Image (tube, rainbow, N blue to C red; front, side, top):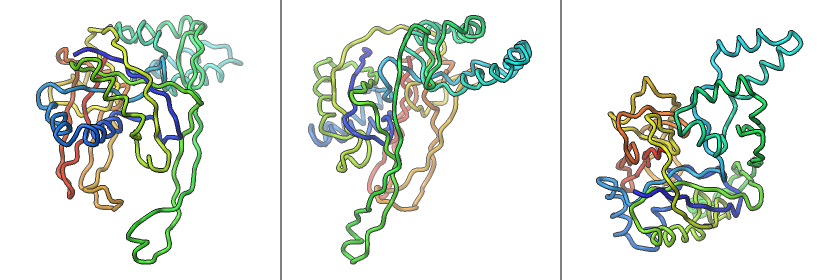
Length: 322
């Protein structure tokens, strides 16, 4: 499978940057609406052998998720604070706390340290030569870089639109929704692996302009414009792999006791309708987790089908790694 980078620009307010599950749902809708039900079924069944394509979550241009491995242990923090001048100890402690809040790491740092299994060296270099690095807006980068990702979250109020309420003459109620506003022209990307010709990928992703990646597309939310796709070079054969999408691992995928990871647990319901009919929970390993692999694979994890009231619900748990 070849490795590709697919680029987009945000055209509206969004709920959040699309994760791999959201992208998966959008691709399924495109395949069903444009290419037909049979194409969707072929795509879903391809995960039983060799998938048509696998994809990561979406990220800001030139940024990767920060690894879940902590840069500072309690012992290191105590050492740095203890060896600082008395008047500088509070500042030293504050600087250490900032490194716990890192959300993204620059592409250059990612290539220099993470892809070469040098996360311990990154820790050491930050302590010994902190002036080489810059940490602003929760982005770790070299001091000569000027990367930024600006966004603003607002709480909005909307009126519910429910056909049953209208039919019964009930008044529609208000509900609150969170909107994320990105800088105009903010570029985003996701990584894709596929054996398909690049021309087929270009055609598929060009339909993203007409399908939202997320809920409430009819209200003008979660709209993205496709910019292009290009093949990029694979750069890592390390034993540690960083997850760029949430993963439902197979039993023999990872050596968990040697890995650095966090989980997200989410409830799922039996149908599309808003109701409190919860039929289970799913726990996935988060993006940015640094996983020690049993063997080299192009991807890990699985797509999990679950029978609901209105048909099968597919949960995308393919762990895209690099």
